[in-house]
Image (cartoon, rainbow, N blue to C red; front, side, top):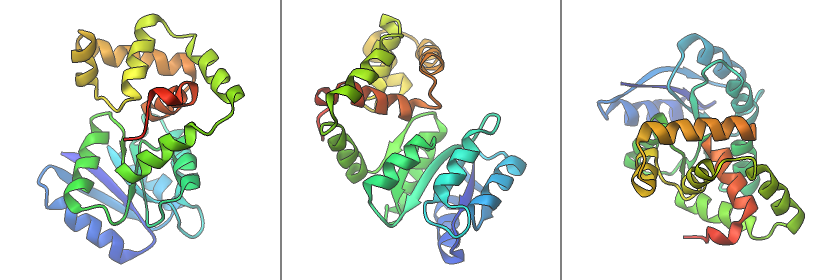
Length: 220
């Protein structure tokens, strides 16, 4: 069972998300929180696998909470939820360590799929968010791209291959098939690459790759 903690200031939203997820049979909602501060405390107490966190809440908002949660030992995977498809939220959420970003009108089946995806160690962004996120990288100046390329140069050839493949949205299994290596080897390369780059998760690694070479990853 995938253990999920739901964080939203609206009780009705929390109830609706709980009903959707618990109807799947393989996802268990282990707790709820109404603001960011409570979310950090519940994450520590309940140790969920995945957290669904609203971006905009009174008190500590979801972005601040995501950053705090990311500093916990063995932190849960965080999916940000919002009714607003705004670039500033996407960038801030991913920089804060979130591995997913979904709009609240995401269909129930896609919501459950997103939870399973991030629980398995992959990233999940809604298609509209992904398209706008990638588009923004094509508008950056050359200095930022060059800085990203310098950081990536610290990777070995194989680590570079793996990181560029994950930037295309491939899972560890898909990367392994493409590069003819075991899934365990892919996972090891990802871990080593993240450590070298000083990044928290594979989403941040994907962002760095897009910054280095945005034209190699055109919008879908």
